[in-house]
Length: 558
Image (cartoon, rainbow, N blue to C red):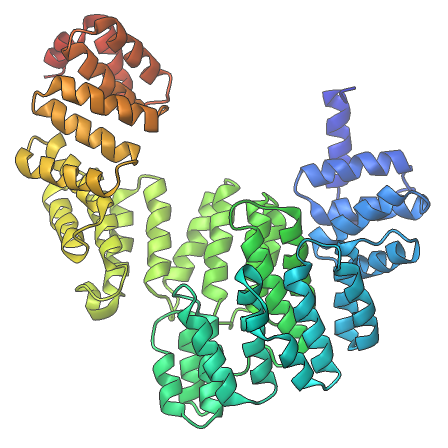
């Protein structure tokens, strides 16, 4: 049955009341607590939901599903004390599963009770992730028992393939560093980085620390070239005569990094409950690793648990190298919550901080762009360009993107000369970038300028990215503007297949149909475009075409 709206509002009001007020009220019934817990969970109040389910479980300890739900919510809310206690309760009642075993293992590692850790490890055997997690846990337990050679033998990459091998290789590098075998650790990190996507600064930090500890400070500094905040912080420590520090000097942090990476990998496509389990486990094991809080916040944000995400990001210390990144992520979540003013203030604070880089200005520019504050966006992107190597003269792998962003905003702000100059700069820096080729080509086409060049740019973009509906639409519109209406209709039909809900593509196809005499189909397309949330200007044009036909509508517009 459906709960009446009025009753739902009363329930919500009950759990939204201040905690102190609730504490002074009589104990609620199990059913009432269950309903309040579900309402709290549905409204992104994970801590409140966990408290309600915990209270209900206390009243009905014989109900296994309540105990499990209380455990899951305690984990999701990041309540380590309750989560560990409930994991113990579930085990004692014979209700443990692999997820409970993860928390039992966490508790044992934090207490350095390696026998208990080994016992908890057996509970992971049936899990799908055991092939990755199991050997790493076994190795760190052996390391905790002072059997480093045995631990490293377990982490032999030659014994693994695919996904597991990558994890094992990383953990082996961490363990070599923890054992003080600096040259071997440096080599392991180097090999690992060679097979990993660029931009993973933490592996560079691990390698640089091992190289420096082996006595080669010059090479260590060379490894720390770049402007990523963690890299900059590591470089400054080394220059000041301080040690960078090992990434995982013990089992707690080694397993913390493993859990954080698992959480990030599992949530890459879409959020899954298992990702949150490992994200929270990472923060339970290694709250001193700022990256674990960032990853946890990301998982929560993707799951639309936004208040919890904000709380996770806030756990990154203000003086940490990742503090800027945490502020930017918090701003993104605030904006998604409709708290745009707070988001803007936070992004402005991040951009104007002494250690701010180009990325902070880009995020601020993006915020202004989404609100169509074009002049403010242009200013922010200009600051980002100035913050790139050689003052934006072309240094840096992504420099073309900055010029493109500023150029596109100038085009929206009706500054075509400035826009064209920036877009051509972006094209100079990345001559085969389809986005730039298409944007510049379409902008010229739309203005009736340099039509031959516009057609060439768009054709090249379509060749490089043939399945991009927006680019295929540009190609069809270029053919239309050249009077090649039959060809344009065919191309725009393909664009419409690729982008079936885009009002501009649908409108263009209607125009092409009109030109080749398929006027009923043209009106059908224009009517469909009107239902696709077009801009106000597009609505006016579409309405005129439907009322008077294409030729008359164009004549009236001119």
